Image (cartoon, rainbow, N blue to C red; front, side):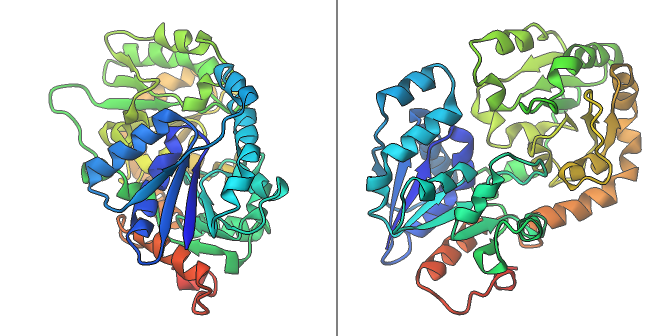
Length: 382
C-alpha cells in the first residue's frame, strides 16, 4: 500500500503526524511518501525524528507550487495559497492508496477531483473552538481523534459516523521529548505565565488585553510573562502585529513569535500559569493540572456553549481592570478547578497512556485500508 502524507500548512501540523508516518513506514508492505509545501516543515520533521529516535524509511515527494501560490505565500495569504497547491497536485496524489492530512481543508481534495485514495484525517489540536471549515470532515473516509470529546462532537454534528471515527490518543505526545509532558519550573527565576492569544477575530484577546496584561504582570511582580501568540496571528500581516508584541518586551516580559518552542510543548511545560482565549494549546498545558486565566474582552456569552468548554477550567476575565486580581488569585483559586480539569483532560485525550498514539494510529490506518471487519467504530479504538 502506498500512503501519502500531505503537509500544506505551516510546521505546527507536522508535530501531530510525524510519529504516525514513521510508525507506518516500519510496517510491511507499506510505502510512505511525505509531500511538504513549506521547506521549514521538512526541517521540523527531520528534527522531530532525530530528537525522538523515530525510525522508518520515508520518501519525500515534491509538490508543484504554481506561480500564483508563490505570490500568495509572499503576501501571507496562506489559506488561499494552500487550496491552489492542493488543486495543482491532484493527479500526483491520485496515485496513492491513501492521503493523510491534519487540516480540515484537505477535504476539498474530494471536490477538486481526488477519487481513488482513501482520505484520512488526523485531528490536529484538541480544542473546542467552532471552525468555519469543519463541515469538510464529511469528506474524509476515516478520522482519527484524540479522545471521546471530539469523537462525540463529530457524531453529534453529523460530521462523521462511528464507523468513520477512531479514538487513538494524541500523536503529538510521541513527537516531543518526555520532559515536555510534565511541568518543569526553573528554581532560579520567577514562575512563568504563558500568554497564548489566538488569531480568531472576535475572540482573540491581544488587541484589547495585551497592554493591560503586561501592566498587571509588572505591578504584581510575581510572574515572568512569556508571550507566545498563535502563529496565524501573523498571517496577512507585514510585521505590524509582530512590532505590536515586541513593544511589550521588558525585564519581566519575553516574546516568542517563531521558534520551535512554540510548537513542541516547551512553553506549555515550563509555565506555571496559562493565560489565553480560545487556543487549543490550553489542553497541552493541562495534561498536568495547573491554574488558568481566560480573557474575554469581547463579552462573548460563553456559558453553556460547548465551544468554550475550556473556559470552565479557570477564571474568565471580561474587563481589563480585573486582569491583575485574576493573576494574583490564580494559584489560590486553582483548587476550584483542578477536578474539572482532570475530568476534561480525560475526555479530551482519552484514558490510554500518553505515549503510543502514533502506533495506534498507524495500526488503525493499516487495518482500515485492508478492510479489517473487526473495526466497527469507536469501541474498536477506545
